[in-house]
Length: 324
Image (cartoon, rainbow, N blue to C red):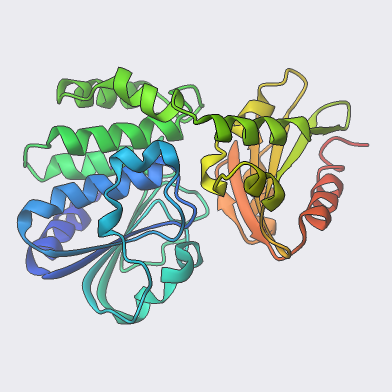
């Protein structure tokens, strides 16, 4: 997608003419969400605006060094904003407890790359072919003509790195690598970032991770892999849900597995489902069916069911895909 210059110019005009700006990301934030939100925050920060950041959920341990949690709004109390940015979020509901912010804003801008995004803001810049929201944001920020700082570059790099699975997913192309090279030229320390994000699991997190892997179940000639992250596992290991990252990707690494699924128990009747695929299955179709979204090879949704009922639903849902 070629960026519409009128939209980009309007975004910079809105930033310049707004006093009170909110930047929001999706609930249960991942690297693309956190990196994009913080990159835009660092871009606007020198302009002396009143800045607020809204993210519903715990910041995972491996991103805490890149996120100033003091800037996060704890609860939404009908604050009014001139301008709202929504990043890496396919619909208002994904803002979680901050979705009502839309009731008290003058103008909204959405920057996203999910194909299930139908354009819910006043200005929507959506590119479903690009690797990550971070990469799309980088394209926009470069047009400003301002020099991007090492801090901005670092956050954008984190967004791209994590949403491409270390540049291994099919959403990675030559342009992604060219832009990554530009970020490195701006001073990004790729070795340090890799160590912090991927090589710094505390022992309690590792133990929780192992418990999740140990409960793996395989169906349909081992083509469908499913496991659960329960509240019991979290409590036993003093872990947060957002800390147990990468299980669904790990399951997909099994040779026979074509779809991997992780069920996350948020309470007794609320389960979040993460889906990953390889080969020809598009898991975003399943996700949309249950009110979620995502990409062909990485998608998810939330369902008001117990974790056991959700497991039964998913096993039955994939029956038709594996013809058994």
